[in-house]
Image 1: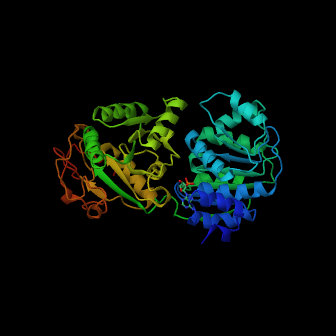
Image 2 (image 1 turned 180 degrees about the vertical axis):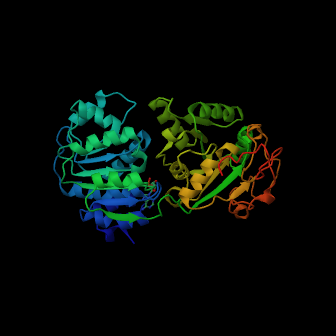
Image 3 (image 1 turned 30 degrees about the vertical axis):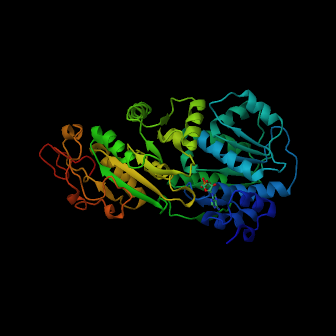
Length: 437
Ligand code: AMP
């Protein structure tokens, strides 16, 4: 399958070829013909599947064919993304596809001054990529007018289900013309999404490349059952095996991520951290340095890390498990981009068994165990003692890419992997209260 058989104009196909993109990905093959025919599209696809081009190319195709000049403040296309980083990435991707055309793009996100954005809009913009909160601010100041917007895209829509986002989206929806084409892309399809879809889409075609919530097959996933206080040592041991490769490490809190970054720095790694306490400038610089390979390890919280698209990320570490199961899918989607292979390694401390179960339920799959054994019936005091798995378990540990360590993480499945020192996994003692059975 080639792009021209999907109906895209030769000009766009040339722009793609110049970037070495010749064959459409499955989501592109499925979505582009419907989008070119003017249908609303609801796409279920992971990050890394090529979804930006799946919505961007047909939109650019239509905008290029109708050469209407962009009027001040009135974008012809609006793309909404949940985070600044994702918005920037979409903007940059579309800018490369639109190079040499009359189409002007703008990026409107929080964390930077209003004035340049207001001036940019007043000069006339065809395609506006925005985060919802800042867009609402500019709408309130009458610096953006959506009354002539013909195309709307909601990207990573499942990340926009928080109350703050929904409030902004409702506001934006009232300002858009009814006659428009809308595309919604999401990695997961929680129930609440149906409501958003019904509010924004008209008779949409549904396209799907992976069952909702399931991770991309190319990502090898492993889990280490490890006490909280032993996580950093284990992380360093695993990072040491791949010193030259880019790794992203997810922590749960800003403070914890910052502390971990300092520890890794002390261990000799080129590290940067991105989280909610960092300024936009610091976040941008950290990601740029990571992309360039000057920084090898990026420690991030969920809020700052969505949408990062750096093809050379080979390892994703879930140092802490996310408490929103869908975020696990988003996190591990930072690796195995654009058909590359990747490994996602998660650490599970005794008090994270509940999160692990929720993640496995959402993915409808077990994560293979690399070391340790599922924590059950661990006394709270032992759970916090920081004991490190004494096991030098089966081949899997430290070689997370090895197939031999693939094994379902079910009860009994990892018994041979050894027991964490000083603890009795999976055995409810008198004081042992199953944490999240
Ligand atoms: P996305 O899912 O849109 O974030 O895209 C993930 C990555 O895939 C980006 O780095 C794109 O440049 C790349 N990509 C998109 N479409 C294709 C394609 N048809 N062939 C190869 N790479 C692609």
